[in-house]
Length: 400
Image (cartoon, rainbow, N blue to C red; front, side):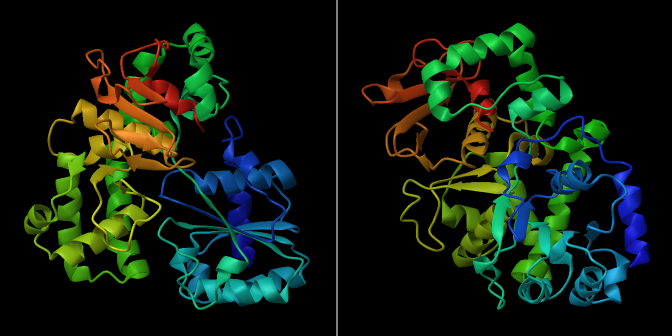
């Protein structure tokens, strides 16, 4: 355990509190068992270590300890034994990173939860983790939070030293110009929005832009090469096919789904195709859009497919990125965390919360697609201010 304590102390010396995401305040840290899920690279480890530094300081290892379960220590030491030993020494708070790297983690965490009622455990894991998968049934014990990448607002705050606040969807739709005036008084949102769409979603941009897309490709490769076989029992012989499928989607999104054509292109059966699409969606590499999300059935064909965020689109596309696809990808990404986003049954693009109709476009968008629709709006890519029912597209980046 001494080696883990040393690593904890070394890591805490590198934690920076210059920018702390609002998710810090959204998590109920008083819960005994918390899971933070998300793609690699979105900042789960940073959030956990910032919480430790803000609450216990940099040198307190008696009350709190951070450990990553991909550490070699856990190749020769059991997780439950480690928790028991730390608890015996008086420890009350454990932050366990990369739990999906430890075989059988859920059962041992369940046992620790039941045996040590004064122990608080925070876990981080791949977005593929499903708490109902394991026999230990952690779903009744664990409070789960899904962590996205940076919103446009967070990007401005982190990289351009701003202090913009979050706004509700109703606030953006009903009082958007007040938000626009504040943003335009401090930055040029349109030019910075163009940057964000290419290189603003992942916080590791702070480590440099030169290898930004390489890092994204590494995330995708790790997800497909390691996590899908480990967590979804993907046959390693099909790794090439699922990468081929992702490449096809990246170069053709938004993809109106023709399962026969797509399964032929990806060299797999329709059933396998739909299963792999679900895997990629679980892994937060793509977004599957349905016209009736509430009643969607297992392995139902989606109506449209998008990559999960615009930076992925730029990193993986083998062709010139389509501006319309990039804009729609952004809108879905920013809305889907807290709102129901469906493929519109009308001629417009999307229905939000079964209440609002939104069409995405540029200057030439004249509103024909939403004519006669109540609560309908154009998410306009080239606007700085709200003009009637035209809402600047970038403004939806202030939702979280």
